[in-house]
View 1 (cartoon, helix red, strand yellow):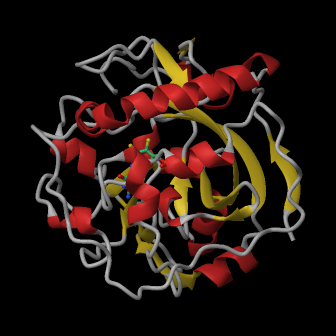
View 2 (spheres, helix red, strand yellow; view 1 turned 135 degrees about the vertical axis):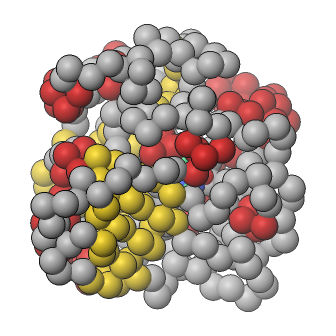
Length: 326
Ligand code: MTE
C-alpha cells in the first residue's frame, strides 16, 4: 500500500507544459542527440574527454523491472512525461550517452539486492529491498530535479525519507556525515571499465541534510518500481541539490565522521564541490547556472535558489558562504 502523503512542494501552475512545446522539444532532442555525448558529458566534468566504450552486459542477464503500484493517481500535466524520465538519463556506469542509457542498462540485475548500512551506528544492518519497502512504506513525492548541466524535470517519485532508515540504525554522536556508494560491477556496468573516474560512484551528505524530511530514498517513479536507467532498485533524491548528488543503485550507506569525497570532487574539484546546492548566483566555472531547460519546454526558465526549496532548507546553511561552499 502506498502512503497518500503527496509532497508537491509548491510547483506552480506556470510550470505546466503545453502539448505543442512538448512535441517541438522531441524534435529538438533528435537534432541534438549527436552533440550530447561530448558536449554534455564535458558539462558533467569528464577530465578531458569521454570514457571509452565498454563491453555490453552479459547476455542472458535477467531484467528485473517492475511491479506496478496499482493505486497510482494519473499524473497532473505539470509532470515531466514518463517517457522523458525513462529515456534521458545520466548513468555513467553504463554510458555517457543520455539517450542510450535505458538500452544499455536494460539487463541490469537488480534483484536480489541488499543495502548495507553501517559505520558509526549502534545497529548496523544489511537490508534487502523487500524488507526496506515493508519496513518503510513508500509514499509519493513530486520533486523538481535540476542537473548541473542545465536541464531539469519534475518527477513523481515513490520512496521513503532517508531519516527513517538512519533513525533505525541509531547514529552514534561522532557521526557527522553520510557516505553512499553505488554497486561496483564492471561486468554489468561497462562504463566502470573506463579509468576516467574513480569507481564506484560515491556521494555524501552532511548528517543534518540527510535527516531532512525532503531527502528521499526512492524505489520507484510514476507508480512503478524504478527502471534500471533511473537507479534501480534504490537511489537517493535530494531535490535542492544538483542531480549528481542523487546517487543511483546504492549498495552501501555509512555514517562517518569526516566529509566524504565524492566521485565528482575527485574528478574535478574546482568544478564540483561537496554541497552542490542549486544556486543561480554561483556559475559553474564553464557555464552559467542562472537558467535551465525543463524537458518538454523550449524556452529556458530561471533557476531558483535551492531549486525552489529555500523555505524548507535555507536554514541548514545559515551563516555559510554559499559561493565558497559550492
Ligand atoms: N548515480 C550514479 N551511480 N551514476 C551516475 O552517473 N548521474 C547523476 C545522478 N546519479 C549518476 C548518478 C546525475 S549527473 C544526474 S543529473 C542524475 O543521476 C540523473 O538521474 P536520472 O537519469 O534518473 O534523471
